[in-house]
Amino acid sequence: MPIFIPANPTSMKTRLILSIAAFAVFSSTAFAQSQDEILLKKLIEGAFEDVLTQFKAEKIPDYFTEHFMLIENGEIWNNDSTRNYVERAKSRTPQAKRENRFDYFSIEVKGDVALVSYHNYATFTTENSPPRKIHWLETVVAVKTDAGWRIRLLHNSSGKE
Image (tube, rainbow, N blue to C red; front, side, top):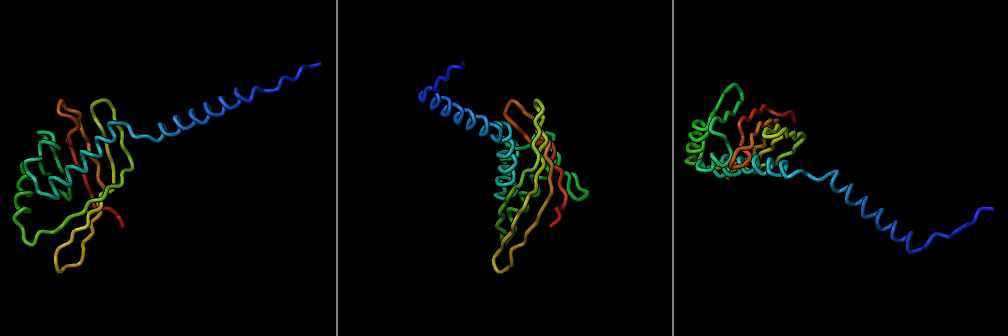
């Protein structure tokens, strides 16, 4: 005849606590962003905020490689053409206020190269004009340099609404 040994309540309680703790750790890390993903998002959002919204041409080296290319609507820009655009935009009046929003749908990191794809939504407002909203579908190729991640290529096209 088998002998029934009741479970030790302390041991059951310990197992339950350990199970809950393990579940919490594993489920939170499954959805956690890697450090590179966080840095890449910060890089892209910083480039748009500092260079293309605040028009700080001196920040270009903080975000773009020396051989940066922007491909948009049949045009190819580099750091010089980006700098020229920023200088012209800075002197425009009235100055439009730009608000950026990003919706990332793919981030792949392979060693020192990353491919990031996202929707970029911008709202431009000026006095006495209705807001203008623009949506782009963009892909960035970023490379890890001694100074950190930098954008090597930015390709965009108009997004569908």
